Image (cartoon, rainbow, N blue to C red; front, side, top):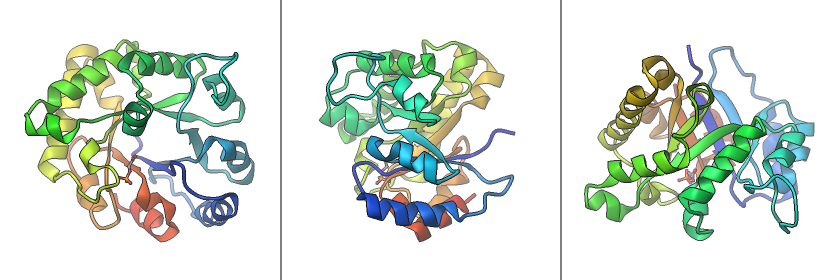
Length: 247
Ligand code: PGA
């Protein structure tokens, strides 16, 4: 059976000393056989330190699409892989909007990640405008088509797709159960057409956007929801442990 997945996206939060405290607390959790796969995405500068201090799994919040070269300030997939990190987030809406990342750039990052054997958490999700115009499904499908659906069945089966409606991220405005289930089922069913049922069912589709201990159990029980990508609520030990136990 495929494992559920919980990602803790720490974004540009936590000083070294704060991170050490939280990491120590989280590392004390005893992970049971049937527990979700738990991956932390700290700021890149802390990645090696986290890996050396803890036996939890880690990933990078972003990569450059090139492997090496004169790209001051950037970090490549190969470099992330060489720290021992297993995962990378690609296509987060904050990267798409604040850093103006296009679908083409995101596709190149997807390829860089796959070539470096990093596991991908590919983010997609619509703005409120798109939802109000009832074009959210076409929009999310175009993000998937232009960003990740060129991957072979073998490659895509190990990917995690995070559906994160932009209007729900960091706003406290969570999507309702019907909206989440409809979009996740749509993503799953369109993948069945492309890759067949076995591969489509092996892809984990997780939800992100104001997911907290008080709504997680309901969200994680929905059809085609295989876990969550958690921002704000992942910065606190108590809420993180509740979230991990919400299946
Ligand atoms: P949030 O962020 O949980 O704070 O809404 C989720 C995300 O950006 O991945």
